Every structure is written in C-alpha cells, then in structure tokens.
Image 1 (cartoon, rainbow, N blue to C red):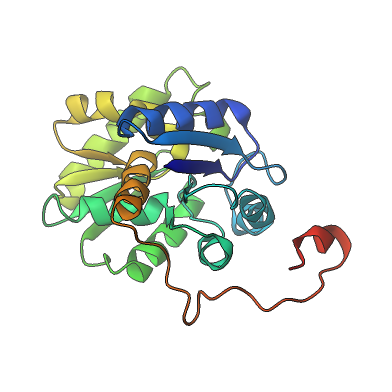
Image 2: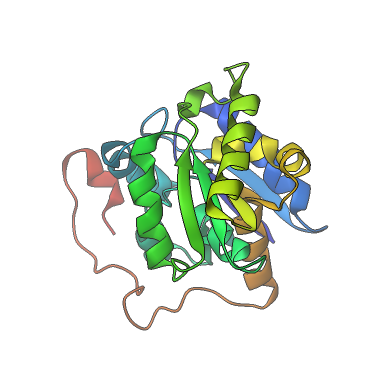
Length: 237
C-alpha cells in the first residue's frame, strides 16, 4: 500500500522530518511518500495561513491509497475526503483520539498561543473534548522548532507544566515540526507522548488493511462538477 503524507506548508526540511517519522512506524510492505505542498505558506500559524494551505493539500490528494494531513490544524480534511479515493486522516484527529485511549485525560502542547483556540475547537469536533484537559503554548514559531537551540528544553518544560497543572495522563504534540522529539520527550517527562504524524500514519495503514475508505453516499460524495476560475482554474472537475 502507498500512503502519501502531505506537509501542507512549503518547508521541505520539515517534509523530510515528517517522512522519517512516518517511515519509523510503517509496517513492512507499506510505502510512505512524504510530499511538500506545491503552493501555500512557509508555515501555518493563523487562520489565514490555514485557508491558503488548502489548495496545496488538495493538489496532493491523488495517486495514493491513503493520505495523512501532517499539520495539526488538519487543513482541508473534509475537502480532501471528498476527492481522495482512499482514507484521509488528519494528524490532530489521530493524535487526540489515540491519546484518549491512554488515560482519563491528555494535554496538548503546541507552538504559539494563538493556536490554542483552534486546538480546542478540533477536540470538540472529534468528540474528545472531555478528555482534553488543557492546551499549552511553548511560544516557539513553527520554523524555529529545529533552529532554536533551546527548543527541546522549552518544549520539555511546557510538557511537564501541562502534566502537572492539568493532572493529565498523556501529552499530545501540537505541531508536525515536533515529531522528531517524541521519543526523547516521553523519556524526559515520564508520560506517554503522542505524535500525530505517526498516529495518523498508523490509522491510515489500519483502515487500508481492513479495506476501508471514506463513505461517499452523503456529505463526502465527490463535489459536483463545475468550472473554477483564476488561480483555481486547474481545480475544476
């Protein structure tokens, strides 16, 4: 099976890191193809960024058996499910659902404070709001996660603070740019740490193994054909 892991921002170094993370958990016989969105923002840190990232996600939702959206806002998830021929899983969706299996509650550690509201919205949407005990920002911008020499120390401190303050049982990492830290963080904070890239990769793999895909009898049926104009001309169906 071929799983395409789509990085909705245009940072190729982040795509390479995401690909390594997905490869690490893929089963024998599962091919992972990590791709960078062909258009969009360099990082996704606002509603504006997220909206402009969606065309790039949709441009890559083709030619694979299943798809992972590797951004914690899960941009374009519903639209991708309408056009993909295989299952599509967002990393926030997968991470929060996985964390809900690990105890009574989890905390999310994300990048900027402005991302916290969106994370709470997603927890409610995915039906895990009662498990989410807190959303905490570490104050590091996405593109600085692998550049700031103090990033790991700062994120570790944020995870420890979240576990203590929220009395939670697990941590969910709220950015694909943190995926390379997951194993070390789990050791350092002494609690399960869930990376959404890996959780989503395994979710898609499991769905494909069971022969399942998105239902297309209702809302997720293919969008009605119509012309699109301007920059979106190529997205007409």
